[in-house]
Amino acid sequence: MTGNTNAAANTQHTEFAQLRQTPCRYFVIDGGSGAHVLAALLERHPYARQVASPRHANLLLVIEPTSQKLSAAIVELARSLPRPARALIVGEPEAGYDSASGTDRFRLEDLLPGARRIIPTSVASVLEAILNPAKSTELAVIDQPGVDETTIQLPQKQEQELATELVVLSLGPVQPFTAGPLRLLLICDGEQVFSARVEAGYAYRGIAQSMTRLDWQHALHSARRLDPLAPIAAQLAYVNAIEQLQKWQSPPQTLSLREAAVALERVENVLWWLVRFANVLDDPALTTRSYRLATRFADHLSHFFRQAPSTWILPQYTISTPVIAGNTATITHLGQLAGEVEALKRHLERSRLFALRARGIGVLKIESLVAAGVSGPVLQASQHGEGDIQSRLVERLEAAIRDLHSAVETLAAGASAPVRAANWEVPAGMAHVTVRGPRGDIGLHLESSGEEKPAGVEWLRPSAALLPLLPEMLAGQKLADVEALVASLDLAMAEADG
Image (cartoon, rainbow, N blue to C red):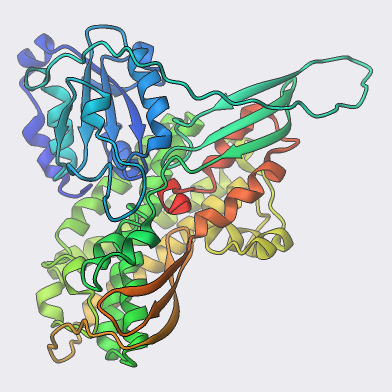
């Protein structure tokens, strides 16, 4: 959805029209799928700007999925908007409540009377809806109070020469440093975090439960929703598990094509994460540079596959490479992009200003990460570097460079396997697979009784492994470093909550 950057030109107006246009200041509630879109909107139009407080906004932008637990925060934030105001819901009509998941059902239109819903087809379509107030009605007055009370017992504090009082600072559940809602309750002693408490579950959708209520083919859609920012990785894990039950070994060419698709998805996640991270750091130069890289990659990626990977990553299904691969010019551009990512990595490694913000902060020990089951860039940053914020950024960029080179090499080779139709007949048994996603290993334990539906589904979610480490990680840190520290972990809350 972040591809086709040229479509932005369709939303540009003449200079005279821009002078007459009322600036749109939007406040965002991201349920877990909007991180890439929001990053792509950052510098898209001079008259559309995201603001940090609903009191400074004239548009509330809600990106689904949303949950019942998040509804109180949605109401409270909507009531804070100065009037008149608009509300825009981005998502499929049934995205907010899935009858197969067993979770609480509610409609955002009932929560936000007067809100307009759009089905996103591209970033340009979201931007057009933001900039066209004439198609929306004014948000009605919301009488229902948002109640989300939390009680904290303050811990005992040792006597100090300079007496200070412990205070509690609540960050979230709507905040900019994770992809999706998460609440952090920080108990602070002056400018230092004394201890922390984590409240998750705001993006819970019951993905595993919903899959056991669907047949094998339709459960694929739920699997893709595990991490809305990395649907191909979760889809591949599900397909690999089915093929393991079927005792099917895909041809090497098919395996390479699948891995190329997942590798490009990992690169996309790294580049859009870097845009969000630079924005959290309030570094305009890094934000602009990373934004240009991410938008150029999204444009190239939109021309790379003639058929979306979701249509051909299926059990036992093979398709010829010429139908999938883009032209040689696109492959060349992606190879050049790898060199620019390498140049950015070297710049950040040498930057003294960036080192002041990132070096030696939030160090994570390998032993703690291994014990918690952490994988991916966060673990590798502690294995190959110092395990601080800077190491995590450098490790992600190095992984993106490797993924770009491997994907380009695979697609440039042009090897293909004989075409074969998908097979959805799944015998009884158990399978366990892992796929390397952008945030770590996505694991799936799948059970089949030989019937038309999965008998048991259990996901291993890389972001979920990091959440229990947050209190220990934040304790003793400076309050000013908390946002950058948490943002450096690249937590995807839809995936973490499941």
